[in-house]
Length: 390
Image 1 (cartoon, rainbow, N blue to C red):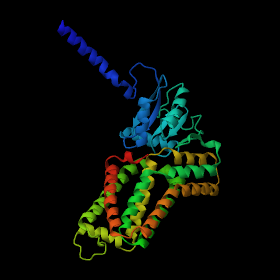
Image 2: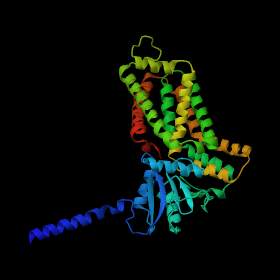
Image 3: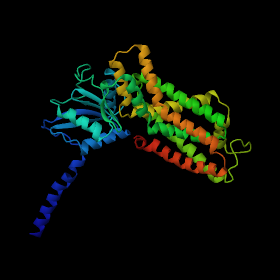
Image 4: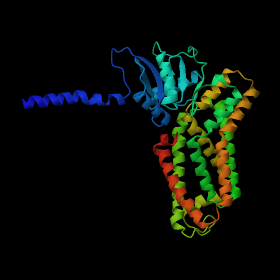
């Protein structure tokens, strides 16, 4: 009797235990089911993709409709992704969603993008797959919706292009990954003790980032593979961050009296000597192009995993069939407001260098704090870059 009771409890546990976790998994179709599906391109290193998948697992509740996930880590899926984006003039960025008659790029949160996805899903009458899509057949392809922080879902066609250029550019500019790279760069330059060089290189960085983003919005957004570039550039930035952080910590512990080691001719450490030469040497072609590389990395990191703002803006420009001159005016306005946060950081850094870099105590604080921060950032850039994207 006891044996039979034990077996019954065991069988019940086996049947019930998986159901306790069913709500936390994205539902998958079983053979014979007739659920309607929409398609989602996603990847592991994109934080917005992870947020979208979490939404689909926990909050998406449109009866009879499910999401089919296409993971870009698979070679065949990535080939389909590039083909789909190229045929439809889309940025190669994630997440990309084909739902009913609408293509959506980016994911803000459950309350904005999530609610919009459920609204579209509720109106679906048949499945929509990337493989079956024929360019130009989507009836709602002219609909341009973006999901902005604080403002929620916004139909861009209700506003003038000039207002959109200002608002979208400003919101798009506050990207944490871009900010981390700029702060890391300025922190490194601040250790040179040379305000003029700091101004020159940081100025080149900001100017280069401005020009490159302008080029992206005009041409490169349709031709560059931002996902693949991100996979290459992000780890490189991580290595640079760790190297700079380790150097700052070494300076903190090895140079307790904080005498300037940058111009020391007797230092024998080869690695440190190379860093000193980089920081203290006059502006050269090598340093110039290294600065350009950092500026490029900022734009690639942001575009690879987007909430859809620059994509929506470029689509608005395409739909309005503007003259070349007028398009450039709007792109310049957008780019300027995109760079506002960088201008602010640059100005604060120069002011701090002028007014705060007065004592060895302050310099030592900069070394220890900057070193720790850059080591942490380097770790995330290499091993978990999705944590650096808001």
